[in-house]
Length: 337
Image (cartoon, rainbow, N blue to C red; front, top):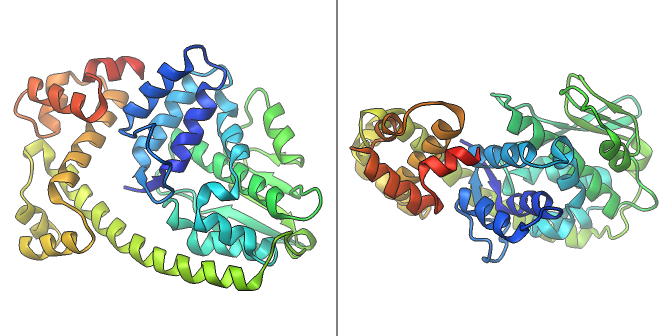
């Protein structure tokens, strides 16, 4: 299970409700559907699961007249300051190539999905999205959002009027590409073998407007420490969540049972979770919530079956828990999908 910063959640919901009647009510529903408080300060360090984010993107695209242009609209709205220290490192790098190297190095500070690698081209530099293991519609849109955001950030920090040499997408072209053309201002190749932003070497090595080696070094050191704190707990939580999810149809596994599946004792697992401020019961709730949302959106299983598959003894207990998680009943959540 991957993760992504709530910064992107706010951007998605902003884009989904800007031209919608009763937008405030719609915002509340969308935020509740993924358990995010819309009134809380936007903290780039707070993460949600990739499954929840994909589901949000898919619902927004399906329920919005602008539909398929939503990922590019969201990406185009991104600014360096939205990303906290990560954005400041991008902005203070000496040139775009330095900015891109920092995305490659520190991208997991804001998400574990749609991460980039920097590759040389023929007189160009490519910012290429590293393919995910299981391509779904939500991930396809997330990759497009990431390329659009990389373009917007490049335009923000580069000197002059920045435009890529080309943009590549693995998905087919939408019926209307006007939003994409307006944002990228370059050839956009659909049905490609990669999702990537391609920039001329001359543009990539031109000094950034606010490039400062000393400031960049400061943020590099800060992000190195932040990355250490993110990679380990995220990896541990993902492994525990996977094991809980696999076992739920047979009932909620104990901490000792999950530890045994991971090849360690329950006491050792409890200690490791405590070291990174994770509580086992919180992970059980997260696994149940994520799995329940997947079943409700992606299957036609009866509610009683979903209750059983997520480790509840009966449908009424499941319904109460789901309403506590999302503010909605399972039935109303399914209808919104």
